[in-house]
Length: 89
Image (cartoon, rainbow, N blue to C red; front, side, top):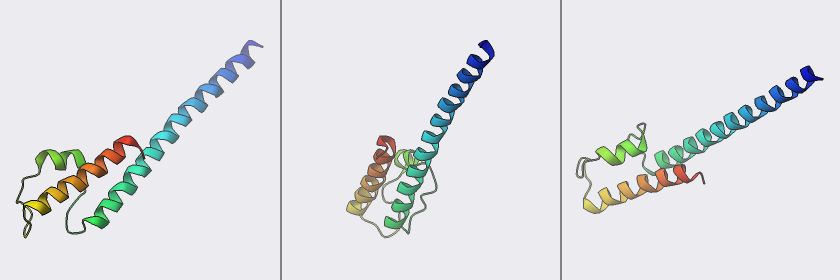
């Protein structure tokens, strides 16, 4: 009886770990989809970096041929994508 109970508890523990892993996989897939959408919206920009890092290190006027409004639009688009990833929807 004790061995059976221990086996059931281990199985349940494994299911819980698998559930967390599934959530992590789903979150990673969602983040990848958001990054793909962002890459489609901004095809001329290299967005392989961490989006938070882009926001932290971006220098206005560093993109060739852009003005102040385009810089702000770029930052807002990246900010919205990052917020969607953090929210999870």
